[in-house]
Length: 124
Image (cartoon, rainbow, N blue to C red):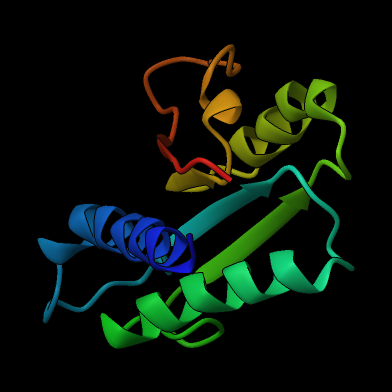
């Protein structure tokens, strides 16, 4: 089970890096912003370990939070009905990509037009 989760986190990190791979080595004014949507609570140690694993995967790809990438985290606190509002908040923030830690998070997402961020989900 843990190997599966590690694979999902690693896959998410690779998927995240893909949109930014084309600009590696080129000066870039804008720091990429990642929306991280989780169904749990920010105070849950398991959820924090998953977020840290995601950050570690990004670091292995050369993305360090606070230096060359920003992560905007949103937590549903166990209430899936909060996902649309949390996702809409991330869209308003104009994140470049949304990584959702639940398959349910990618269904029924809000859209605002052609500038919507990419989104990738992993089962929690």
